[in-house]
Length: 310
Ligand code: CP
Ligand code: NVA
Image (cartoon, rainbow, N blue to C red; front, top):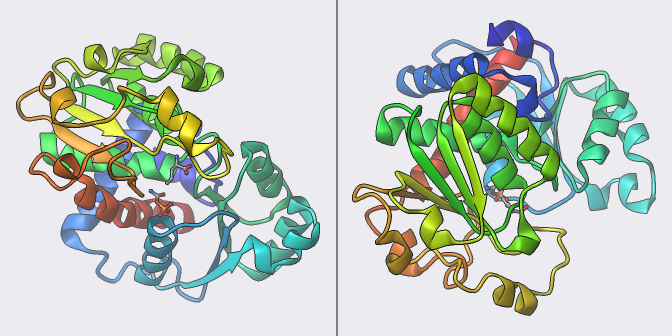
């Protein structure tokens, strides 16, 4: 039962869940979205610290609202205004903050920074994005696909662009849930090797498939879902001009989508760089699911927090 596994636990990446547990969590999110939380207030008299070392619109606000929805008090902290910005270690920061708050939602750089903080903290720590993965995003992504398509297993999900944190979590979630995932990236921007290894095992266990390549036209052929993200992630330090060069041909536009399924849905975790990885026509068009996808960050996180803190 996912409820037992998540109770009082960290949520650092999707690798802690099996396919059934992930499905249960998504079902709970769908249920809470449909029925509302009613009197469910597991965070009453509790404070959740939200520590962001990188900018955020969706994750920060949706977590703040999710905490309030469950009766709690969110306390948002930016790395720069803490002593962390003057060199206090991430471990010491976690040790101290966890004496004041009941849980921490953390966006940071290296994933090892998150795991070090979690190891030193005495309260549950939730990953709000690291350079390696963005598991809360993937929860909302899968929830949105379930709403649009009715189910997940057997659907073709084509990711196009940078093999980044979002791609890594999407690969994990898609292969845990029986999807056929293609990832098309420039050779220089492939997903993380150890996540690919893990997803090969998922494919054997869950009857899913995964194909990695460098030709987006091939990758999106017949796809039910086409997903993209920024070419340059926060903290990646890549020169935008050289990225534009590397990602030539990887834009999600009408021409690329002409090879996808007739009822393809288009996804983007946002923020979008219109005119780069996606065109205005596509993101604002009838196939775009991005605003529902952004809303679902809230519903997925209400379910997640509900399971961790009840
Ligand atoms: N998708 C997402 O995580 O957006 P933010 O960076 O605005 O939180
Ligand atoms: N890959 C992007 C996701 C932003 C939500 C980044 O890390 O900047």
